[in-house]
Amino acid sequence: MKLTPFHDRTSRLNRTQMWFNWDRHIVPDAYRDLASELRATRKRVSMGDMSPLSKYEIRGPDAPRFIDRLVTRNTTSLEPGQVVYTPWTDERGKIVGDGLVFRMGTDAYRISADPQLL
Image (cartoon, rainbow, N blue to C red):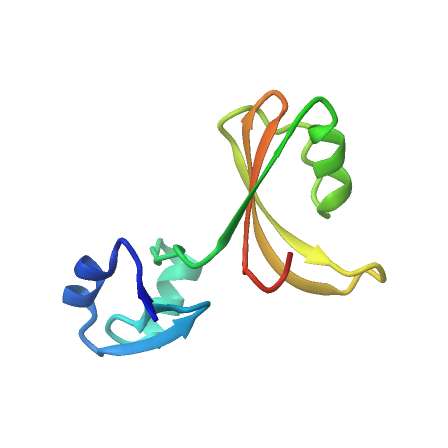
């Protein structure tokens, strides 16, 4: 198992010492209690160590059109520096996961997703 770049900091904050293995990385499961953390995610703000997520870069003149066909959200209005959350679907339209699409430049994108989904 690997430690993420944030492990030293998160291990000091993890009062529950609940950990889980995520794509060969050890990450916190809950820092204090899961219920309050879920409430914070839905109503306020939360942070998590997303180091195990895969990152894919798509570049080139056809990148905007490719990204717009790849995900369910309309990404054509994204400006460089913006990011959107979107679900992934299979060919039948069933949601199989989710991730983030970052517009890095005019013809450059980064997708961040669970390593097993893309």
